[in-house]
Length: 180
Image (cartoon, rainbow, N blue to C red):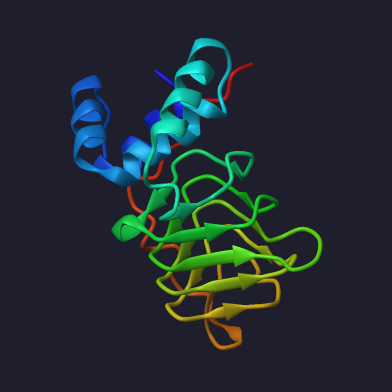
């Protein structure tokens, strides 16, 4: 099984099994889109199957995420989108993207998002900003500046509010296995 698909399922369900994967695939259009995205970014037969699933997937308008976007293990998309990402966005492991999230850039590269980051509903992250690890971004925020590790930020324009218990909404974290 593709490690990225497994990591995404763990984020949704808290565990992994082939039967659970099949049930989630049938139940959730978000997870179906993620399986196509993960497989199209694989190699060999998985990539071939991913290209077929990508072509057949009808949720691409809800998840305007180019297949070349770099996304780490354990992606969780809340409330079935919609989500819009620039192809130059880089997302770390165990990231939550809530509904109506937009991460883009008008000129040059878009944001780099760290590990264990919760992005609340209706958040816009604009231009080449860096979001640290273990960060929470509150609903309705417009992020135009870097956010350091361990921060909770919110507002329009977003500012750091505190450093107490950030990333608390990132549950069922997937810990990638490092191969030697």
